[in-house]
Image 1 (tube, helix red, strand yellow):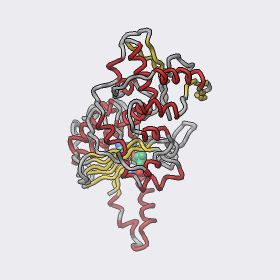
Image 2 (cartoon, protein in one colour):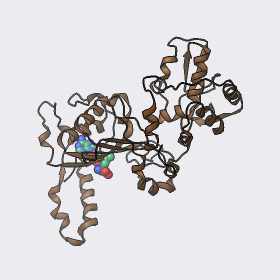
Image 3 (cartoon, protein in one colour):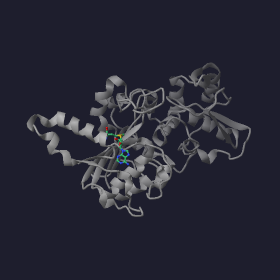
Image 4 (spheres, helix red, strand yellow):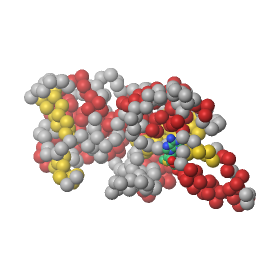
Length: 377
Ligand SMILES: C[S@@+](CC[C@H](N)C(=O)[O-])C[C@H]1O[C@@H](n2cnc3c(N)ncnc32)[C@H](O)[C@@H]1O
């Protein structure tokens, strides 16, 4: 059964389907006619006034690539607050199917507004497998965005493929995978080695790779950076450029850029602790686990798990020196954005005083495929 509200989209699907399979059935185009149903999937909802979910064409399981569109709160849906059509689609599917495979943005894994969708998924399915895909350097969609007025027509959604109701035991999720274009097939072949069994909660689905499952589970998620921050301005400040891509820096002197966060601490010792933590690969990895979109949110910074260690004076001095030597510039919307990119050797030293997970260093690369050469910790 194929369904869409757009008659033309359905006709195109029917033609493509026929072209692919008609060699054994000369009348296939007509035979399958009734399996193509024009239906507005969002005209019905469990809480709707007149509409009921039993109007949805009969089915057991669903494969869906729903529309991704920010919209107004639609109170007919339990997931109203998600304000995205893909959440409303998934809600109707969750409530009417034994299981599904979806491709949607990965935003539901972490954005606060998708809390109700995460709740619904966890409530209904004891088994969920979620593969998450970044959009650089390669992205999962190869096509272009139709109807876009944007100068960039590439479909650069950071997507997630979710499998629910397959009876694979438990909840599983990958990291926000990165791979190079030439590694696409390797990435798809190795997808399952990136799965971990970390606990998914309605608060967020942590995007942890199998290679970091033990590391994630070893952290005390209640002991966070927010504990050592001051809610009021103090003389102990760190400046954090808030659009990371391959690294995160925390600076003692601000840089010239439009997006920067200022964090305050109660004393010099806490400031230096945070200076080490935020400049380490641990913080960068946390951003990938907790967020992974374009920007570094305050929530992600607040929740960085802190690890007990003694700040090393030489390392702090080395970071301060590096701030003066390693300025980088990126042209964004016509103006240069300043940042500091510490050498990876320095970041590795900083990370090594927090933990001995040397593979954290690989998180800064533009591909995770190198992990396939490592054994899981
Ligand atoms: C991302 S496209 C996917 C198209 C196709 N299924 C595929 O995977 O290539 C989303 C599709 O959802 C359809 N759509 C949008 N709103 C809908 C609704 N309320 N009910 C049914 N289909 C809808 C659009 O017409 C469009 O074809």
